[in-house]
Amino acid sequence: MAVNAHPDLPLTPSPHGEGTRYDASLRLSVAPMMDWTDRHCRVFHRILAPGARLYTEMVHANAVIHGHRERLLGYDAVEHPLALQLGGSEPAALAQAARIAADWGYDEVNLNCGCPSDRVQAGRFGACLMREPELVAECVAAMVAAVGIPITVKCRLGVDEDNDYELFAGFVDRQVQAGAAMVVVHARNAWLKGLSPKENREIPPLRYDWAYRLKQERPSLPVVLNGGIATVQAAQEHMQHLDGVMLGRAAYHDPYVLHALEAAQTGAPLRPREELLQQMRPYVEAQLAGGLSLKHITKHLLGLFHSQPGGRAFRQILSEGAHLPGADWGLLEQALRVTGEQAARVA
Image (cartoon, rainbow, N blue to C red):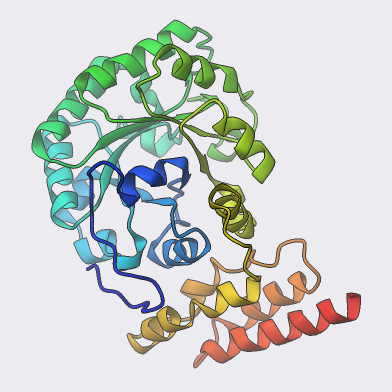
């Protein structure tokens, strides 16, 4: 499960005491994103941001209990601090899944109360749970009682035409009373009908002031902001009001922004994109030796040279070559060489 296939990064235990990497990672995290934040993506993000908190894709509690655990829960040891995001609405099942997550060494379990997709609603979990704060509290309390790692909640401001700050704050308060250690606020409403998941990430207006107010009124509650954060400047501005920021698609489509934000936070020098990619080599070669196709890793790397000279060529070479039989690290070396040549011509 947690095997260090990346000797350039240290093995990190799962600490939860004061002053640990887990606590420090509150400042910057990467959102759970279905079909994107798998273990290969997370190893890449760990290289870009050694101090960030990483989240898995959402996994339903029943899948954790009954499914293929290595496939669903497996990770590389360098990914810590690492949280498992669960979906579900049955307290007993969520408690059992949380125990499994703790046994696998996860640092945190996060309950999804924000996904608006029809499939998720049909299973009575995700954003529709914001209409059932007492049920969510029962779920949180059951998980808290089952494990010794933090249980957290990721939610929206409300659903559909909800426009009542007190309703939102009351939902959060109920989860904190049940034992939630932190709340991640995606600062939009979720529309349960009429909008696709993609539209739900773009159309409902952002109301960052609600998250600011929540933190101001509850200074001891850790509040992390998610939604529409795409630049280092924007993230730093939000951090003046809140405990941390969670980057979503910006960290995937333009992953260097994740590196730049951590560097801005820590004062560390920015490292060249080429150097960061080279640090992936031990992991890539270990995965290829285990039978994995290169395409499963390179799909997460395509945005590394976003908006840079040669960036289109970098994407094209990886997109066209990674699926071919025998594709190996040499393809990435080729992509780097062509990208560098094009960048030199522009300079």
